[in-house]
Every structure is written in structure tokens, then in C-alpha cells.
Length: 72
Image 1: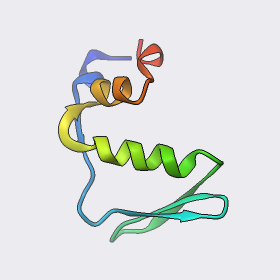
Image 2 (image 1 turned 180 degrees about the vertical axis):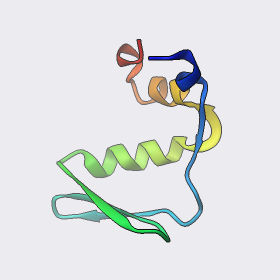
Image 3 (image 1 turned 120 degrees about the horizontal axis):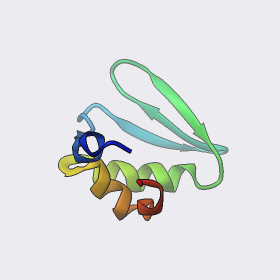
């Protein structure tokens, strides 16, 4: 993965919220919504959104979530 991408800082807007569903999680903001399905979807999204506050780079978020082996 490109070093430029890994250095990008990500921030979720204040209009984003998540709702657990019977088969995963639904994400919604002022523009629209979508669903992710799977037993671990809600927990993954909850952990991910907690990291996306603009203070961490993409690489730091990946490492915090234990994905550093996939970041190259």
C-alpha cells in the first residue's frame, strides 16, 4: 500500500451514527445509509469509528485494529 495512503488522516463526520441490526449493522448520515452484514460487523464498525477522529493516520488505525499485517 502506498505510503501516502497510509499517512492520510481520516475523520468521521458528526452526522454519522450506527445501529445494530439482527444481521449486522446499519450506518447512516445526512446523505444516506448502508448496511454491513455478519456476526462481527457491529463490533468492527464500532471499533473503527472510534479510531476515525482525525488524529490518526490510516496506517495507525489499521495497526490499532490489528490489521498491520495487511498494510504492507
